[in-house]
Image (cartoon, rainbow, N blue to C red; front, side, top):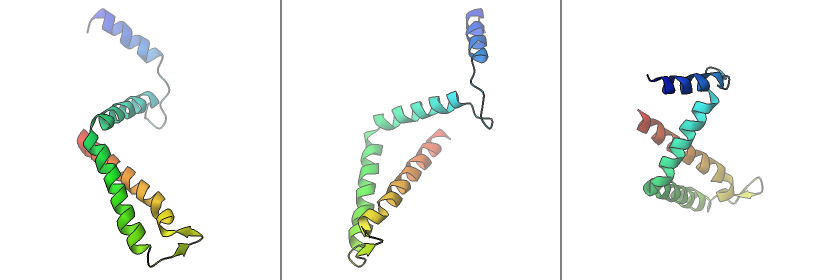
Length: 101
């Protein structure tokens, strides 16, 4: 390692943010930035997430929603929307985790 690189490394070590539960927040932020850049560059992933959401809403929201009128004052489509969004977030995170391995 060159002296310049060693000096930069020492400066980074001294300015480190304390880790929470063994995980440095700066590392999490850098990983998040990398994944967001990769996600935004890949149009097929964006289109897949949008089409998957629409498909789930059409199949579940309008298919089953015809037999279920209202749930606690909400239409069935409004009722399942948070679950569909959560499903897509979990699916996207699983894809990213598999891509890292």
